[in-house]
Length: 289
Image: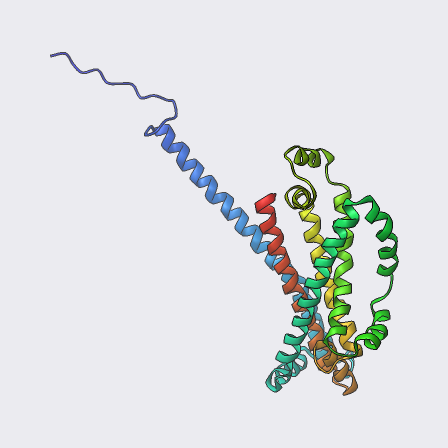
């Protein structure tokens, strides 16, 4: 009988070979290490974000504990928390947060849509730029509180005046970023879109808007922050409920603890809404980035 000849083992990577198995194991290990590094970075980012607030809270506690600042000017963190619990038990906190968030969202949506439309007009049309840019630049310089007397005179002290003021605040960041970004869209990209038969609204929706999406998201984040600023301006002057009203009411009653608590709530709401826009930003980057 002729002895069978043993086939040599190939060193070329392939399915079922030792080299392929080793490469697969190394790839799996590399993937695990990459995920571990990414996870650790996320943890660092989260912990780093809480570092400064924790330091401020600790310094605040020490200052009040040693009596370095009178309690009438700077209450202890425990007193501020107790004031917040009292507002919640009375139902005032829930009511104030609900009405303020509602006003911000409605005014923000109105201002953002108008800013997107008029920003597109100014950014895409030479005639629109000539007719509108100077006027909007002048109106943008008007302080928020300057609008309050006029809006109260025109729209009284109802919801319309407050939402209009918030819409004004949200309008300009979106308008400014969109109009400026559209002026700098790559002309070759626009020409390519027109070569495929796109014009007008179709060209804007398909080519130009995706090209300026990062700028639009940045404008939305600024507009949302501006909306909270204009909300407080509206509620400080003419309101019977809301977080701005609660600030004035607490001032009139000498409740510094409530003032601090409402300021903290406003900061938290602003951070939450900004984080939501950040989620939208990441989704857009994954889709069009």
